[in-house]
Length: 118
Image (cartoon, rainbow, N blue to C red; front, side, top):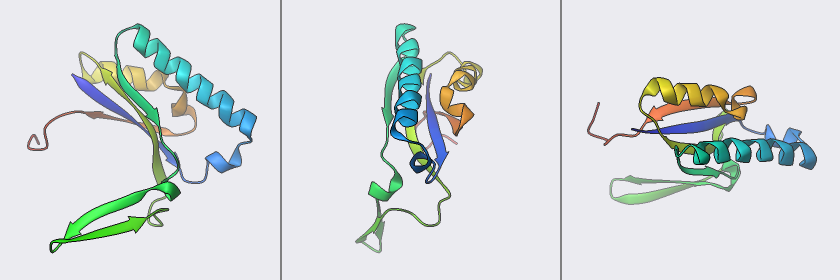
């Protein structure tokens, strides 16, 4: 089964770190991903730019609506993800507990499934 480990971090947190601190944390996350890859569990991973660089797209009454970031209503943002292949949710949660980002962010574990599955 595929699980998405979403890294949900406080908005603005990255700006509180200097470049060396940011690079050190990023390197730690890369090593974590390399460990998952070595075990054959990593399907994809990516770090994301802050939401101030994002755009939200909606269709309402047949008209597209675009909203540039940052998204004021959000106190947190998705900062990245790991898509992993696991035998169970328990295994995915165990992996999330080992994720370095759990120290400074929240790691949300979500099973991949078709949208019609409740």
